Length: 288
Image 1 (cartoon, rainbow, N blue to C red):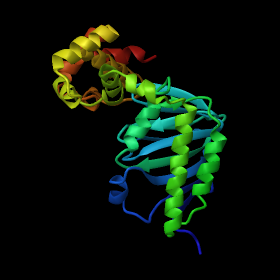
Image 2 (image 1 turned 180 degrees about the vertical axis):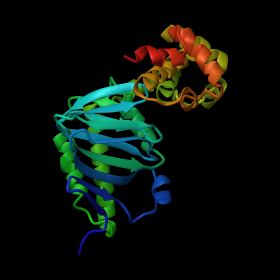
Image 3 (image 1 turned 30 degrees about the vertical axis):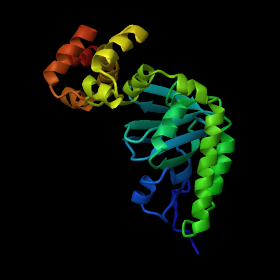
Image 4 (image 1 turned 30 degrees about the horizontal axis):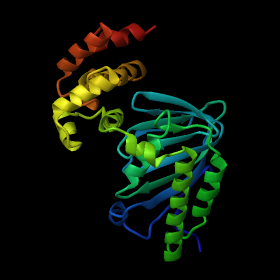
């Protein structure tokens, strides 16, 4: 009997989705497998821009491609992995001359974000891990793709393989519990900014979320990083804005809204302070 938990796409992509339990059940568990798969991409094949409601990791097995998240652009090859947190807009594209193939695994649950972020804080590029033996991850993912979603025993086996993959990642990025414990709350806040800067963040709410006073946040952040948290956030936002102006035809109003600005005029005025030109002029100067 054909397994209904497999999806095939033009013989290039195979995806397994765990279907025995509801999404609500998995979202309220500590950690639960959502899907796993493998794809051999055609030249120039792209996916996105899109966002997911689950955590996702791709392991590049062969070839090359480009991965974009926030203002970051990564050119990746075999041995790299790229990490996609839930709720983040991403885009990736296979090389036109040497398209990549990759395996992926996605997961969900109360602790899923925490586990992924712990891995991300242990990597130099946050969203990318270099120099992995991605074949060993493919071997584990291949085991998942042999499972039958209708069997309870296979449900547990799939989740055990997921835990093994997470365990291998923690080992490969050389994660140290002691180092994490030594991270100051200001380090955590900076990482929070790096991940969530596109939202309409208010320092008073961020300070409250981390259980500190806003004045302490501002003073301690400036002492450690030599820049105020407000200016740091603006720098992140306008780097992203500049890239969107350069690489898309999105209206300035859409770019402004996507970065958490409620007032397009205020966005344009502040952008001009950073780049000495308005957003419209910045884009027009890039045209041949």
